[in-house]
Image (cartoon, rainbow over all chains, first blue to last red; front, top):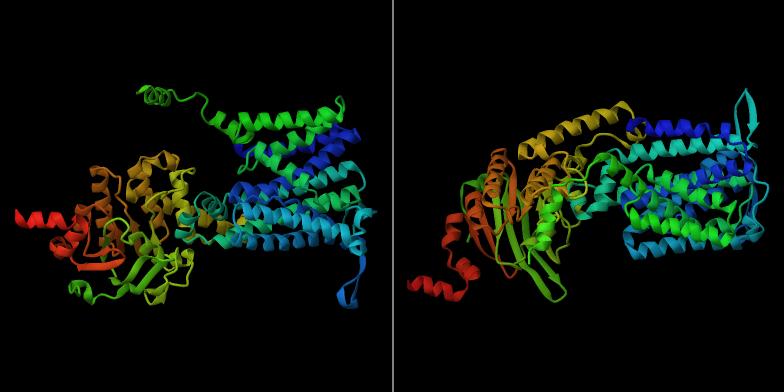
Length: 344
Length: 270
């Protein structure tokens, strides 16, 4: 049963456009789906290698801007009067290049995580996202700065000879996001359930012990960072071509925080965690908006988050797994503990 | 004080030459030279703070020596990272936190088998047959290793839930999984009870018969005397004695280092 759960969830999700036609809710599903992909990518770093990158939105934003610029074309002058003119390319090449560029920055940040560890790494990643935002804001010739990049073309699907098909409808974007989500899930699950994933968990648990059996820290942390950044870049590309407009606010810290909340509440280091956390915290604002004022909405959001973290500190998915694994609490463990406490 | 005995005919495996480790003004190891030959069991003993664990850290790449060279089968180790040292076949265990607590015993050994994996990244991502073959071989090997140290009945329990002695055995199982040609064991029986120590001695004897070179740091003297071909005694970062167990047992300097001046006088007087 457990083996088929991801597949059944995918089938269930695929039926969503059949019973939800309301564009407002379908839009919520699409943006939530995009954020779930980003949260899944963060989980690979945070949950499996234990590296807290609080600049994760940088990869998302880099993917979004790269993909938008490749498909829109640009004309910029670099230092020294060299002019670079780029003609618009098909959208899919934009998304692929967006993934590669985000992956490259993932490589840089991954390499950095060896020079700086712990709190310093967190600060470096926050700064990285902030620098990316400032570049997007101030390199007006390339990014239009605060005016935002407009009229980003929609995703085009098609096979040569069979004609091309522009994705305009929300239904088609829903299926596109679902497909990318499924592929990302498969990539991450293959990685973490293999020798690579064991090496990552070993590094997170006890680095000295891991290297003593021959696990190369650099190799696996950088690999995790590259894959994670690439998937976040794919999410960013989808975001840009779905909304058709992006501004430097895609680099805001609050988006990283949203991803972290999704991962932590759902259960870091579990495959389903970011999906469950993402659905809950993607939809709380959507549902509460229809009957609550904006202040109350965010209070509800905060209360939910605090409740989950307090009651289920490991996250929702590990709690459910534990509940299924041991239906009855172990009675043997309790008297022994009580005995120790009572001993004067 | 050259230790002349039967093993001298064998090839040197691990060679330390004039190794020194200074932490600022503190001298952890002053000047240490010794050799471990292929197939030999050598113990490194000495009072607390004598520099035994530091020596281990230097050999396995966790620390750089201030001076001197360390060679394993002719390859200099002093510039290598710990995982590169492990790739040469020199694998250590740890005094504390010797297992991955939050994963199962079986998973621990699978992690230890990392070096044996044959699948590449593409095999993993695309779930190619090579991936499944490699994983199946690793699982079979993991089961064999667990059986060989005698904790196969705990395979699916969390490593953190094991009794202390079993955790130490698992630590050795993981080291063995990494396919070593030489094992460095850091106080493997500390905290074990007599039965557990007995089981561990049997395992050690079996490894030795299989031709494994072993360097042991240990406080348990009966075990050291019983298991070693040769003993190197450290005190204040210097080697004060070296030789077969029988020589070391009677060595006045060793007795002085361990028991102090007064005890020796009293022992002589009685």
